[in-house]
Image (cartoon, rainbow, N blue to C red; front, side):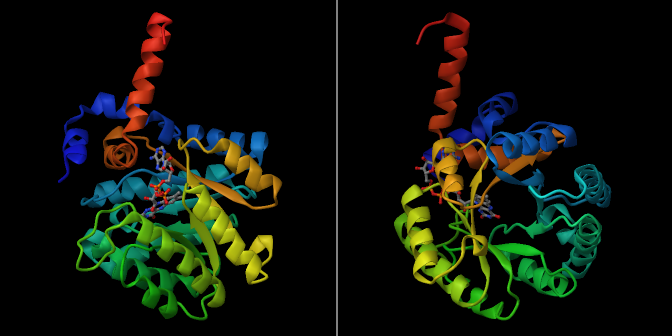
Length: 303
Ligand SMILES: Cc1cc2nc3c(=O)[nH]c(=O)nc-3n(C[C@H](O)[C@H](O)[C@H](O)COP(=O)(O)OP(=O)(O)OC[C@H]3O[C@@H](n4cnc5c(N)ncnc54)[C@H](O)[C@@H]3O)c2cc1C
């Protein structure tokens, strides 16, 4: 573990909550939906709403998670601006792929009743096979079901080819989990170069790439690829995380006719949100300093 991750691991939970607040919509379904509606009404930014939580290993907690997703879906209802995202490790993966597929299948079927698209997030490499198996199995009955691939993993070119004919929504991102050098790229520039190659491959294989990065140069190059391949603006989208300060760039993309979607996470119980918040802080420790500076400014009136 690097020094940065070691320090982030030691931060007390109340401080993690404070530092991570820009990345999280709030602690209720209403807060998440309000945030998504505001993004849409104010700036025509779409959302994908995610209940924070992972590595859940009790049936009661899985049932609780299912219940929150059902309430979220019913409260969202049919609309054009929000999808939902979910993770195998919060929905029964501890009891094997078949059980997890059944649990996720129930949520996807409920979402279908309201025409809400669902994306299966990708966790660390130990989940890749299970996630793709569940995705393939449910995609047959749920054409708008989508998933995620991570460009850092050596296997991803093959995974894209293995989805041939599915015409799927695939979020393509570098991946947030540190992975061993035996199975994954270790250098960020290489991961980003690979992301561009895989955007091209996804287009060529008939998929709808969801280009998930905050690196403006990478996004611009991905859009150049789309244009070179004569893709229309409704054949891809750009995704970013709520809380990463990219508003001006998002508005520019939207003005140019590109669909922009932000990831809007919420938690009803904060204990489920801590791992996500720590990963976001590790991705940008400067955010903690920035928030501290703002708090001091508000308290003292001095910069
Ligand atoms: C919508 C969405 C969904 C995702 N889903 C998954 C998933 O299912 N599985 C998975 O493994 N990964 C997922 N990721 C994470 C992703 O893979 C990257 O780890 C993350 O987006 C940072 O990589 P980057 O491409 O933005 O490049 P970076 O080089 O990390 O970032 C580019 C620039 O963006 C800014 N930035 C990036 N992160 C932050 C931050 N936290 N706070 C403030 N500024 C920041 C910085 O200015 C940085 O220089 C998702 C990302 C997005 C946007």
